[in-house]
Image 1 (cartoon, helix red, strand yellow):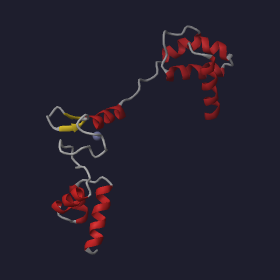
Image 2: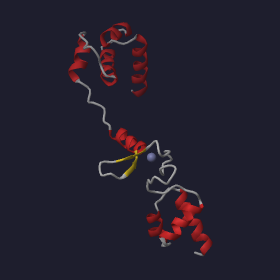
Image 3: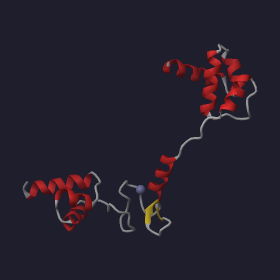
Image 4: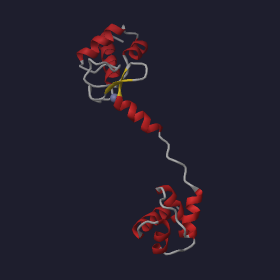
Length: 153
Ligand SMILES: [Zn+2]
């Protein structure tokens, strides 16, 4: 590989969002060289620093810049996204579904619970109006859930 090819490889890896260290390990180029190319291409630093205009995912600083528990600078938007990705919806309440099916619906059902109740009532051939009353939703919601169930079956 000649010098021009190596430079192209470093540029491609930089544009793909890899860190200076990763590119140094992959290509064998000195980290200073990689950093020089990064600066020449006007790419933001891999690490979040107050000097770069955005994090490596493009979230603008400083509105998204904060400090974590250890006092290190972090991109708050990236952290929020990680937390959202980790969020698990609550398991459906089987008793709430049973109550809705039996005609004694609780005050509120989650969308998943409502869907499960509609499914069970639909198998018992209740009309959309009756189902809507039992799960406390509009007949339109019942029709939509039904067509989804038909499509899935
Ligand atoms: Zn970010």
